Length: 448
Image 1 (cartoon, one colour):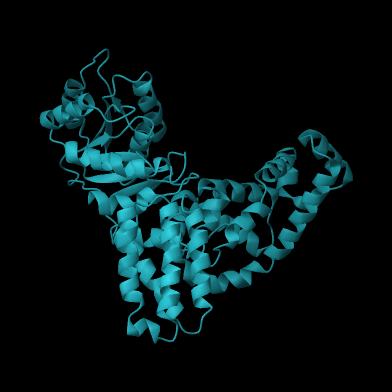
Image 2: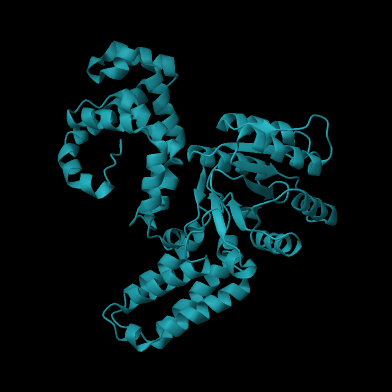
């Protein structure tokens, strides 16, 4: 995640605070100096950092904290609460009208921010919630823009409206409104043109569309990897055409993430969603409290459960649990578990949401070689259906054939099968553990 480096630095600061039985004012100020440097290195706006550290310091050196039983933990809580406040305090819902009325969302942003893909991601989520969505292709300048929207729209099962040969975005938007009403759509999403940089012609075009159709909300898509420039872009769009909220893309990338901590304070507009991957399903509602917990390495169990519920086939999960209870875990189940993990964003994404992982995340990730997982999948796919379904069939001649089919040395096949058998033995102990955990998972059963 974009905040990994910041998380590591903050955890080291707070680890030192927690190790002290009592805190002095000097301890707090020294710790906050390190927090300030960590935030600046994460590309958080300097004005935001200054206000943040001043507020935390005022609260942290109060008598209730300094004389408390766990002053270090109290300081962490204050930092957490201020991070939440910094990012907007509460999740902001997308401003949708009742399904009987037409909601018009104008998607705006610079070229390269992922606006078209994000439009399709959001359309897919709205469709899953029962909304009938229509996409309007109003980017008539970028080569392939209309085709791209049609491709991603088709993947989400959402129709795309175009006017063949038209070079007039305003007229396309007007025709799209008529089409949406005629077809009974409740949400129209207008994919507008972007530019490499903010210019007057782009802003004039957006204003013209706003004047021609009754836009409900302007959703600005910005690239988290551009750091403070994302904040400047948001500020410029707010001043020129007005924005309802921000969608921050590429927050899963190797970036410092400061935009997420600066946009609300600088622009006064909430972050509505964050893009956490390239798949069309990788768009998450933005919860300031959950993001603050992730930044401080406290995990995010609620988002983990929601992601699991959205991506995991519950029927498959129940069937796998039944087999686990009877110690019938097979190679097919192993493949299913890997597939489910990828759907949830991969091991790194899942680890970041588990409380207590903290600084061990990188260590665990380092132990898991993605190429090694691919080789294990190759071994399984080189088995016959009968072998995948019944691990007890394995013998020397079968192993030789599997090694040849996978193009992998025999030793690797033997090592994987031995590891798999150890996993099966471990699975026999899980039923008892699952009884105790069932009530704690909100009734949802994980397949791994």
